[in-house]
Image 1 (cartoon, helix red, strand yellow):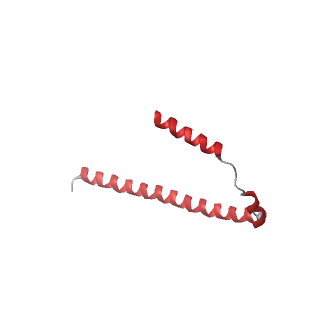
Image 2 (cartoon, helix red, strand yellow):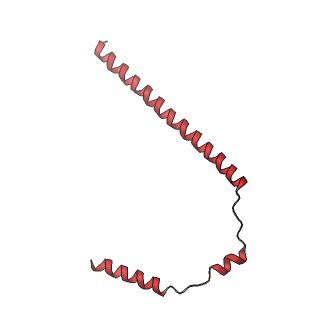
Length: 84
């Protein structure tokens, strides 16, 4: 076997080793980050729970509104966009 060819093969193998090491490091970091975010989320939800919204309050806040101004603005914007 030629010494030059052996040197190139050795460099390719080293490249694959470094690639595996780098990708493994990133993969492990992402796993640790996801686990720590899940733990942090559970701790925060334990100490700061989300307030419950009652069904009566939500039905009164979604009353129908007069959207004529919004419809006019959207229509004007579409017309302006089509004209150029």
